[in-house]
Length: 128
View 1 (cartoon, rainbow, N blue to C red):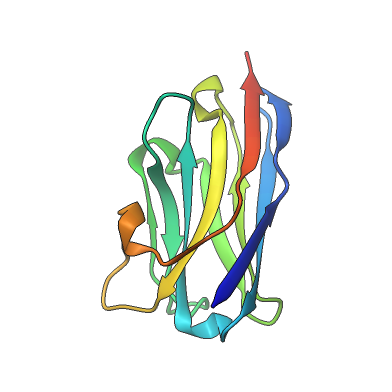
View 2 (tube, rainbow, N blue to C red):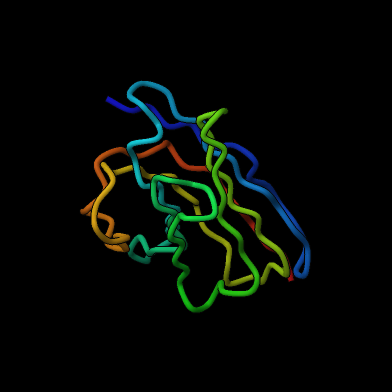
């Protein structure tokens, strides 16, 4: 089992920044690919970003098109933590953001059902 706890959400004005954190406990963090998803009211959960297990210069990273050049995913394996730095936030980024984990694979997964473990979510609200 892997337990995930997100933090760092809040209310911010458009153009502002937030950094989300996801602390993992349980099984070896190194062996898991980590992803961030979000879900707005009345919408399906959607992929935001993901980072493969290695976490260093050799890690693979993938972003959803609408957040490229604004969001940065990173991980600190020594702290068992993955981060999502969000800059230039827009009102359409408003959602509950979820951290997810899956055993490392041959490719980065972008579909929610491919992830085995989920955090409880943290609310991000961007005002216009």
